[in-house]
Length: 148
Ligand code: DHK
Image 1 (tube, protein in one colour):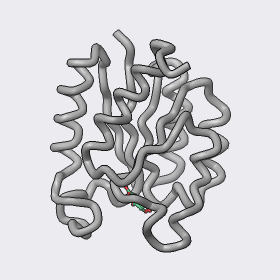
Image 2: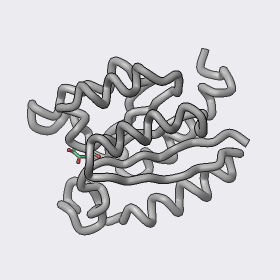
Image 3: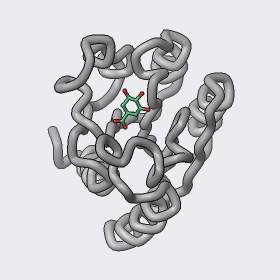
Image 4: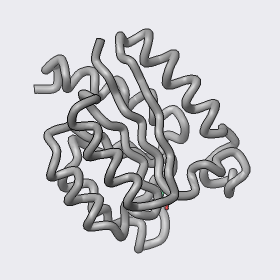
């Protein structure tokens, strides 16, 4: 069974109570439960990590080299600031789907730039918590070669 890491960055531990008008009312625990179920239906084993710390996220990406076939990454605000995270993705041969709950392109200008996008397989944003399920489907299709 293929293995996917769902990696969430800063402030996403507060989902459900954090600016629900923007990020919705679904908690991270609920998202993880849905991902685990949807992943199982797709034949994917899904594991989860969340950290508010850039270096921990980088370590998780490095560790994924030996343990996971793909990563769903919501890097939170590090998306817009972290060249180190971008370099980490470039340094491992693991496909990454960039994910955002909100449509970052419809928000403040500083959110329009993603350092992750150029090194990601693709970007999913604006579909709220459902985006995680879409990202798992996109990774499965990619791993099966259906997207080429
Ligand atoms: C989450 C964040 O924490 C923001 O910093 C990003 C992203 C958007 C999201 O929509 O999931 O700008």
